[in-house]
Image 1 (spheres, helix red, strand yellow):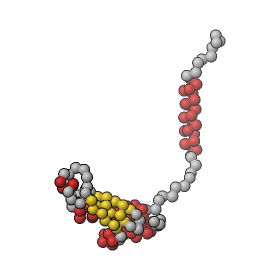
Image 2 (image 1 turned 120 degrees about the vertical axis):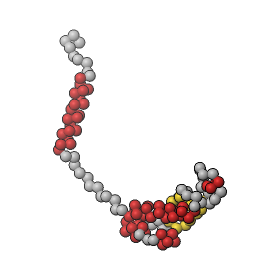
Image 3 (image 1 turned 90 degrees about the vertical axis):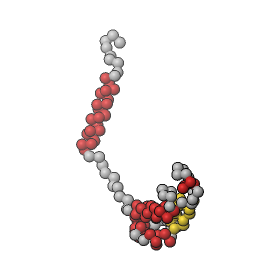
Image 4 (image 1 turned 135 degrees about the vertical axis):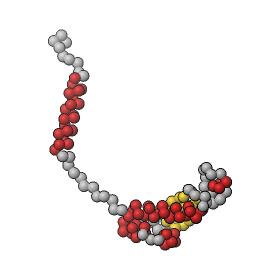
Amino acid sequence: MREFTHAEYAHMASLSSGELARDCVVEAFHAHGPGGQGVNTADSAVRMTHTPTGITVVSRDSRSQFRNRQRCLQKIKEELARRALRPVVRHATKPTRASQIRRLDAKHMRSKVKESRRRVRGDDA
C-alpha cells in the first residue's frame, strides 16, 4: 500500500458515499455484547475496509445493518478528512530571556532550601 498525499486524501474525502462505497470491502458479522436476540442472531454489525488506503472501521451501534453501513462510510470519510489536514510545521525556538531568568531563580531558590537542611558547623564540631 502506498502513501497518499494530503491532496489525495482530501479528494477521496470529497467523494460521494456511493463512490466511496465502491472502493470498500464490506463484511457483516454477529455483534457481541449487550442486546440479546437482536444482536446475537442477526449479522447486523459491519466491518468496512477502504481498499486503496487500508482504513478499516467497524460499526455495531444499530440493530440495522443498513444504518451500520452508513455509519461505517461516515467514519471512513471522517478519517480521510483527518488525514487530509496538513500537519503543523514546528520550528525550534530559543527560550526567552525572562524564562531563562525564572528558571535560574527557581534553581537558586531550590539550592537555598537544600542548603538550609545541612548541619550547622559550629565551633564545638
